Image 1: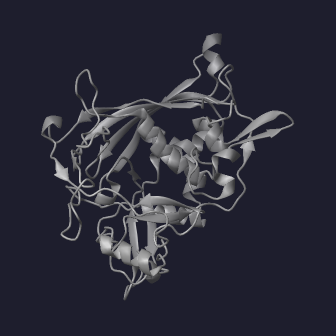
Image 2 (image 1 turned 180 degrees about the vertical axis):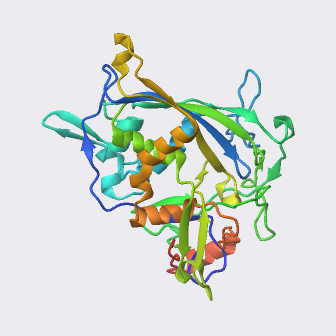
Image 3 (image 1 turned 180 degrees about the horizontal axis):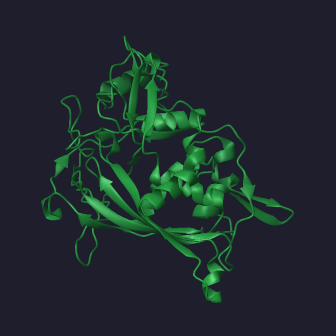
Length: 373
C-alpha cells in the first residue's frame, strides 16, 4: 500500500537474501546417489481457484478426453519453484528484474571445467536460451486430478473481472530488483472481487470460471538423487508451516494504525486472478515414499520407507525445522505474505482507480510503498 493511501494493492514484496548464491556439482540421472521416492499430495482450494485455459473466456483448464478440470504439473512445479528460489536463495529461470547474482546467467558456473549449479537449478533443472549445457532436474510433478468439488464442474459459476497490473515504471509498485512479488490472501471469500464502479469495462474484463472453494485435487511429486538439504528445502516449500505468528507494525498498516498480531498457517497462492482473490490453496503431503539407497532394491533389500500419519508429520517437522526457525528478513516478510488468517486487517485489497496511475505518471510523484512488516 503506498504511503498516504487507504487501499491495499494486491501484492507486496519479499526481500531476497543478501548472501552469495551457493553452487555445487549436480547429481545426474545415470547413477543412484542420495534420496529418491515419491510424495502423494492433496490440494484444496480455500478461495476460488483459476487455472486458465488461455482463451478470452477463461475456463478452468480441462482434459480433452473427459472434460475433467485439472491443474497441470508445470503450474504446480512453477508455483513451488518460486518459493524455493526465495527460501533457498537461488537464481530464477527467466530474465526478470532481479539483482545480478539471482539472474539465470548465474545459475551455472564452471570451475576447472566442471559445471556447478545452484541449489534450485540442481533440483528443478537448467535450460537457458543459447546455452547448450542443460540439466533435466531431479523432481517431477504430476498433473493434479480432481477429487471432489462442492458443485459439479459444469455448474461452476462464471464471473467478470478486471485483469492487468501496474507497469514497472510505477515505482510505487516496483520498489527495486532485490525483491520478489507475492500476492495477499483474501481469507474466506466465496467469490472473486468483481468490477468496481470506477474501473472501466472493456477487453481487460474477461469472463472467468474458477473452481469454488472446497474443490480438491491430488498429485504426486517424484524425486531422485537429492541431497538432504535439497529434499528438506523442497519439503518446506510444499508443506509450509502449520502455524506462525506475524506482527504487523503501525508503519505497515497505515494511517492511525496500531500494531496487530496475526496467528495462522502459511498457505500457497497459485493460478490466475490473484489480485481478485483467487488462488489460495492448502497443499498437504498425505504420504511419503522415501528411499535412502535406491541401489538396495537391486540387491534384494527393501530399503524403502512408507511414511503416513504422525510418523510422516514428525519426519516433515524434523527435516524442515531449520527453515521454521529462521528469522531473517526474507522469512519474516514471506510469512507476512503467506499467512492465512481470518480477520487480517489488510483490507480492502484492490488496485487504485485508473486515474490514480495516470496522475502519478503525469506528475512524476515519488510515491513510496509502506513496508511489508
